[in-house]
Length: 369
Ligand code: F6R
Image 1 (tube, protein in one colour):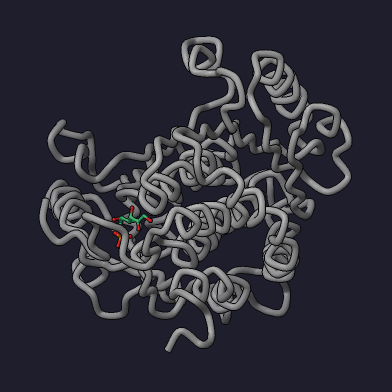
Image 2: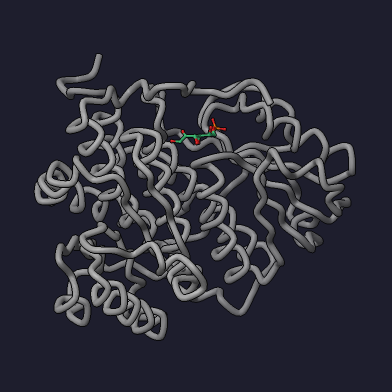
């Protein structure tokens, strides 16, 4: 059943290149245009959308946080992302021109379901991004984009997350395409880049031995911190969540720009800090800022674990451990940057003697509020 892997989680991590390809399958035509016919919300309705609201929980919420960067950039439509459990209790502003995107692997998460019911009562259109055919969330939505990751058995979400990201990018690019923005050329280029992302994920998976070794060496630590910026910030949150739920360690993700506003006080001798470095192309200002953050925390004793693009040499002098990822367009980087953090958490948890497929106190789908 586990196909020779020690756990479902390892199997599902390894399945990610295929999962990502399957999410794209049949959704891009020969000319590089998106053909999301299954999103039955008519183009004229999508052209009228003046706000996007993403609701989700846990890992799916992190996918939503990343989607916001993509949606706002490619469509210029304001986008909010909210934890489904908070959403309906604050009387959110919704109407017929609001597109609500509910992201859920299981399609049964009660908080997400209640959020989308609330949104529909207010007249908003709801698009589900879901992995489970025929589950409740897609059945109650106006439209659904299935992620086609295949069944995810391990409680900790891995391949579902990557495919949620791909589905979110597809929606963002599709909205951009339907509405016609100034980014038409960029959209076409990104669609091409998406088509080759599976190979990039495969390459990352082929270089994970040093990450596993590092993870094992940190099994006795109490705390691991994660820093990121721009789309790397939700990646940091996701890396920390994986470590909490699997290794039962204190793990926190921070926006690197917030360091000085508090979290830097946590830095002490030999505390491991994983830093996700933005691509030096595109957002080079952000890359430079993060390089100074790495210097700052290292000067205060942190053990820096730096996740950076191949060819980015500026980080090398300050990295106690360097994890290389292939170069991608800025917005797509989470697809490759998250993978080493999944492997890291899985290996660290195993080294601590934990059962990775069934972490304590957790259920695969949370059908109560
Ligand atoms: C973390 C994890 C959870 C789920 C969350 C939402 O690894 O798996 O945080 O992401 O419970 O579940 P779905 O996507 O089924 O709505």
